[in-house]
Length: 41
Image 1 (cartoon, rainbow, N blue to C red):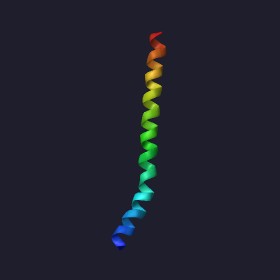
Image 2: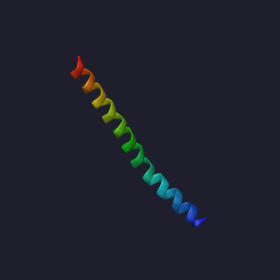
Image 3: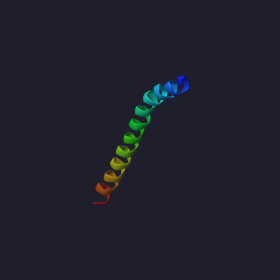
């Protein structure tokens, strides 16, 4: 049970970092996409 508790604590601390990285990557992809479109037009 102690290892499970430690794992949950670790998971709760690490998960937001991955979430923010993921959103940041998606946002930067969208930005690059829109910049390419605006350059074409």
